[in-house]
Amino acid sequence: MTASERALGNVANYVDERTGAAAWMKKNLTKVFPDHWSFMLGEVALYSFIILLLSGTFLTFWFDPSQREVLYEGDYQPLSGVKMSAAYASTLHISFDIRGGLLMRQIHHWAALLFMVAIIAHLLRVFFTGAFRKPREFNWLIGVGLVTLGIVEGFLGYSLPDDLLSGTGIRIAEAILQAIPVVGTYLAFFAFGGAFPGEAFIPRIFTVHVLLLPGIFLALITVHLMLVWYQKHTQFPGPGRTEKNVVGYPLMPVYMAKAGGFFFVVFGVVAFLSAVASINPIWLYGPYTPAQISAGSQPDWYMGWLDGLVRMSPPLETHAFGHTISWNILIPGLIVPGILFTGMALYPFLESWMTGDKREHHLLDRPRNAPNRTALGAMSLTFILVTLLNGGNDIIATHFSLTINQIMWFSRIGILVLPPIAFVITKRLCLSLQRADRDLVLHGTESGRLLLLPHGEFVEVHEPLSAEKTWTLTQHEQIPALELNSHDSHGVRRPGGLKNRLLKRMSVATVEQVAKPDADDIKAIEHH
Image 1 (cartoon, rainbow, N blue to C red):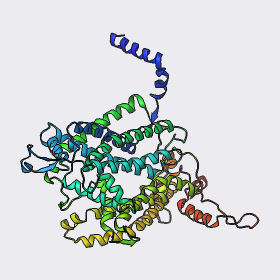
Image 2: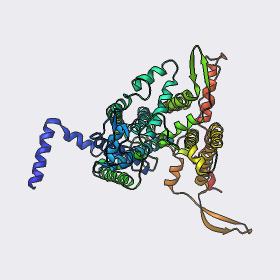
Image 3: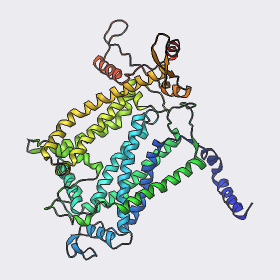
Image 4: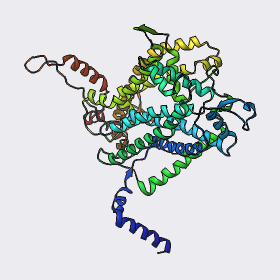
């Protein structure tokens, strides 16, 4: 044993005698994690968040969160001598005067975009595979909370430089605040420290962006990882995988080596993007002044759907009792997003209620085996894509020689028509894929060999599936619809009949399936 090995052993023994860590580490360092590419989406979100913390800490060393008016005297000559806020001037100082400052700004921005892409993709993976079911409802709620906070955090960070483009977004946010009945004006005055734009907004959102929300993020991510560790990771079905085991690789050394290497891959991709692709060039926009607005202004993609909702809303207002309610701002800016995020948060409980399934689930679903859920997801994505398209209606109009009114009316009609169409098509596709799986199990795969029968008929020889493939296609459980009778055994109507009829209809729609082949079907086909 070398001197260094003895020293490490002594340190480990010292710590173990005082904390008892050896037994805990021996048990948990061999914890098994399943291996599938889609599980890396959550890791991308985690590593992007770490990059955000590191780059954001660097930027706070020189950023001045103040709206006091200063005269710019930095190295960027086109703005030399221009009056601007200290926040905008310090951002220019970071970009042009601090070595590596512009690169760090762009790393921070690209990491934020990647974080939102990864966390939404991760949430979609969880939704479409049913990973939100018992006992993981709390983790689903944490995920929805992280997406919501990510949108707010991204908007606040985007607004900090106080340039003309971000100021336009702040003005829209102020309008949404004012649209809240009765208390909207008071909330807007509180947020801005007086009339818009005021001098208190940038310092306040700096505190929220740098201190409050990152702390909440850290707490939620920590709880999320603790729950994943305690409840064990979900896994896709396969031979040897059950609801009571996990098939994969141990944490040490395999998983940690892969995770550590993947972190540097993500960091490298973000750094490369930041070095070659310019993003948010605030020096081209100039400082914010309420009297100006930049043409073709677009928010970050995760805010585009909200901007598209506001743009497509017709001019609806109500005047009553001395108050004006701007429905054209209130509905798309607050009510519709509130319904969407509330529905997302409650969906695991609604699905459990509709199916009556209260059991624990550690094996994931194939999306085709949950056609109603997959169709709901496709419908929601179609809704978001239509609003996102309308969020860039001015850019689309200029690039494709269309008018904004054409895009506006397409979006207004499409947001009502396209999501239901997407639901029906997706559900039919899932049922068709189930039917194809059933035929594959019963008849096998085409071999490409033709057989000439004695009476002259040509038939193609089919090869039976392997036991592994057959098990994968038939292992899923098909839950029957709830049996809810409107009358009891004595013919007396049960209370809550309307609710039970509604629940029964939803249950039938939710569990609609193509019957998978059982052992009797397979034996019967073998005789043909």
